[in-house]
Length: 317
Image (tube, rainbow, N blue to C red; front, top):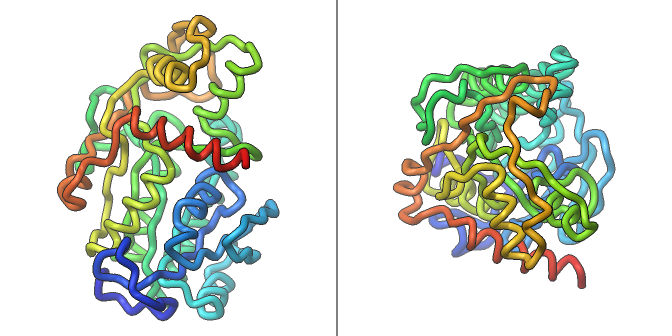
């Protein structure tokens, strides 16, 4: 993939080894991940923020209306905008909503991914497809790229099928399995926003002590994904943080880092929550493969929380 033609490229960029400054088109540009990805990359790239359902204006980016329900329409847009890379971040991320509406989940998570991958391949455009850590039964920790999937819910099943269909339509695609958080003062909030804003308002939280994950800051996720692409990576790669933590420990450490009261956070267990969709207890991913490709670690929680404070300060100005 490193040798792929990049018609949207311009001048050299040291942040992307072996590549030109890319023009990036992000689907799902009004969502948490799409917005955070654009913020992370807009100083190093031309960012086209693809808007599908909701309008979003973000400084330093170019908004464009997307028609993802047709590969032909998306192909026409790619030929018009000429990006070097498409980041497919659009889809349904609510686990319970997917369980309630499986046909909608299939449309948003599988069919749109097929359309994007098919068009990107036909246009010879590199593709970063965003997958999930919800693909497994939760019976083992530190999941590797070759671990056997076994999704427990509709969301996980659709994300797994999307991976398979994307690989078939665009064999050179980089498929990123991840669990992310980031700063989102408006719109859909991440787990960190929910906890920080809630604690500041004096709310109490029940966080799962028996659900484990390896979260990564969106900024680190985006930059690592593009660096992998520039190094020629393709196929499935785990892009996660270096630390395995419970949702409870994540909340406690986040509160401590932001100087917020930890006594408002209580331990709870997944079985007591009575959620609509079943969920895995274990979602921690082994990022050793990505670390070897990048020649570095992906980041600790303390580092991510420090960057999150910087992002909050920058957004407050």
